[in-house]
Picture 1 (cartoon, rainbow, N blue to C red):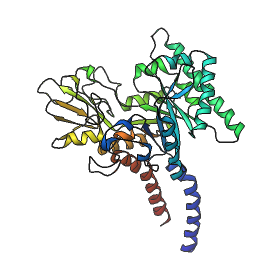
Picture 2 (spheres, rainbow, N blue to C red; picture 1 turned 120 degrees about the horizontal axis):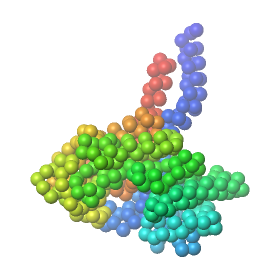
Picture 3 (cartoon, rainbow, N blue to C red; picture 1 turned 45 degrees about the vertical axis):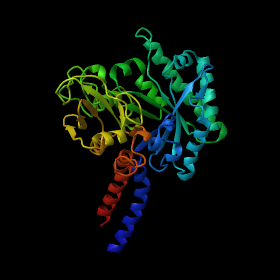
Picture 4 (cartoon, one colour; picture 1 turned 90 degrees about the horizontal axis):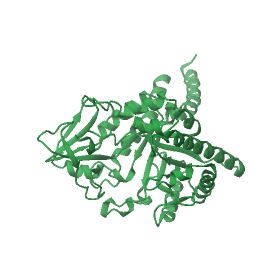
Length: 406
């Protein structure tokens, strides 16, 4: 066969292959959280929907809505309706963008009251559909973990499973009724094994959820009495009693219990956890008895945004925890464990090798979104995720196709 004829055949194959393969090659999701309280930060740290790059993530989740005393979904900030409008308008710039509203209830028992019986759940479901359609969201995210007693956890697991099932059934029925794509249903869940066991019937909820975002961060706090990284990829040599408190163990546990790998999203934190050291030791496991001072912009004890960590690192040294594949830094008595471009890249390769469904980011406002603080461009961490998780896979496919043809 003449070379140009074979090339023509391969070109036709390539077009079909690109149609078939790009959907799988680029199917990794990059799900990013927007927080409605970041609007109150000062100066260059103030964050609004107008600061969101609509082409950065595949999905955006607005945090948070609440369950009110009538068992209806409701906003949590005085100006949520205006922010919803600006948030939805991002889809005018990227029509492929998917937006969801996340609901949680940390400050009272109202979420559990809503779960407690079918009547309350149906009230919540009906209000959710109306609310999501009114404000042009594409779906609902449930951020929940069981906070009851050990005597009642089985009932809590069952009620949450029923909520997921009933929500999906209602979303399907409503989509068919209005002849539109159904609303998406996702959950953001714990990575702590003891919390997982008392909160979720994994095989059952996996049937009803489109995506499951696993919070693979905040594994360790100052209450442990020592300085440890809050989002390690692997267990460390110091983890004698906490061998499951790491990303690798958490994701594998969810998968082993029945969650499809392609539905599981790894959590990526754009912040670090900081501690006050109490001795001359500075490595992982050094004694630490308190949270470090608040960052100048986020104003939360022991939590520093990535852009605040950049300020801290001015004149400091980044050290690497080899067995856990994450960095930390020390200055004076303050110790901070965080993620950077290097650790994000290693984690992305890990989730790709294990066939997980993608990444979710907590949160957009904690990255250096304006590029003002770190000198690494806008959204350095999230852009690095996009590069390796989505764009990198597309480039690899194009390179493979080129080699195959020529």
